[in-house]
Length: 197
Image (cartoon, rainbow, N blue to C red):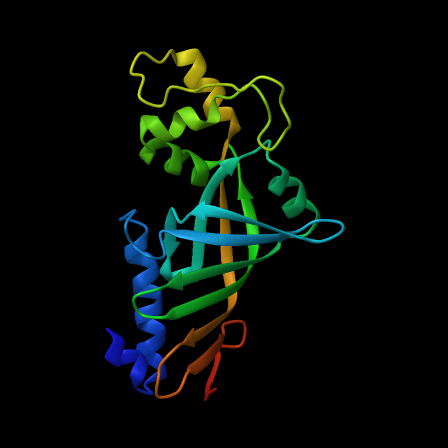
């Protein structure tokens, strides 16, 4: 894998980057399974670590799940520009992906994701308090419980949403003792270029 990034075949490098992202959806041990997503609020950028839940290669889209009540939804409603940050320590590869976000809530897209989610994941959306709110008493959720009422699952389902982010640019940095390499893919105009740094 590292040999691909040592070379100068830009098409193959891009193909491997998206394959690494796609593979990371299915393994919690994969370096890109968790990513940093940055949104913009009124005063400064906000960053969160999220789980990469889906990659739609044909659309150059990355998806994550969140609670419709969370602060990031407010941010995305006002400004849907986002950026992703991923790092693979083994490959010494950093990815920055610039995208536009689309909120899927109680639509076919989110229903499909909900149907594939594990019960343990669904229980994360059962808190009474809104995500990110300050609370006086911690609310403990037993993620291993099996006796879950339909009413509670219905409540969780109402809170569940999927954020689809469609990339318009991707920037990678490959760290190497013989010379770092940086590449940039601009998808809006299907333009690609790279340079050594």
